[in-house]
Length: 142
Length: 142
DNA sequence: CTTGAAATCATCCTTTCGGGTGAAGGCTTT
DNA sequence: AAAGCCTTCACCCGAAAGGATGATTTCAAG
Image (tube, rainbow over all chains, first blue to last red; front, top):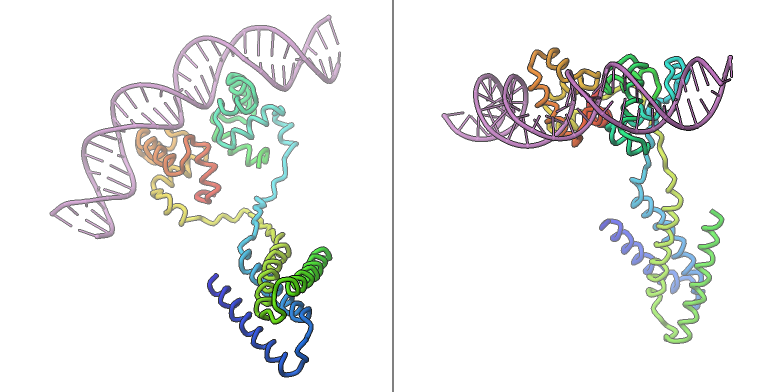
């Protein structure tokens, strides 16, 4: 940052000197003001763009393309998992408790428990951690 | 791009007019050249930065997260997770219950419970499903 | 040699899960 | 209309998990 300011100051000083010199050396005294303005404008626009580059450099957005997930609907059908059950499964995989899922889906805790129980039967597991693992293997969830 | 050029042209024109006007209105004719230069430099530096920002904005990098798992040891250190805790975490992620982990590691259930509790504290979670999720995000486990 | 982290185990208590069973209302298919 | 599935909810009970705290041993670093 300090370096940039220094470069700007130096550029300005050199430019002033140069223009003054040129003015008395080669041109008439009433050299158009517009000319100076245009030159300065262009030069400092360039510098500004360069500075903008420097300043905004680390603005790289990284989009994580987690191993291209293709939803396996066939498997979902084969296991007879319903839409609602799949929904519960997704929230479960995100680490929510049954109560939290119930709140999220606007149903009672008991309903969620029913869904999870059915899921465990259909996935042939007995714990939610296993259910999540298996569901990921079968690509039922990302 | 066209818009930017237009804005630049217009700015320059307006500025020239404004300065000329001010010069004849309030100041002596021999107003320092340096003054103009400084004003123009600053203004166009600002415009340049803005333009540079516009131009370099949409830099989106898509990173494909393929299956190759790279163990993130730095994060493990940063969180202060011990070897044994990490071991428990791995089994936990495979869907084992605390009792099963205890049997697998030849320690008591209480020991495993202690490890899991410490893990939850260090990972700042409160359930094993969340712990697994976070650990995968941080690449502590595959 | 002391200090501290890691690993081990324990007890107590609360919350969450999981399993079993039953049931009502809605919707589709036969 | 009847059968079948989905969704919803309820109650009960035992198992598992989670939280708090304290104690012991071992081992490496200071």
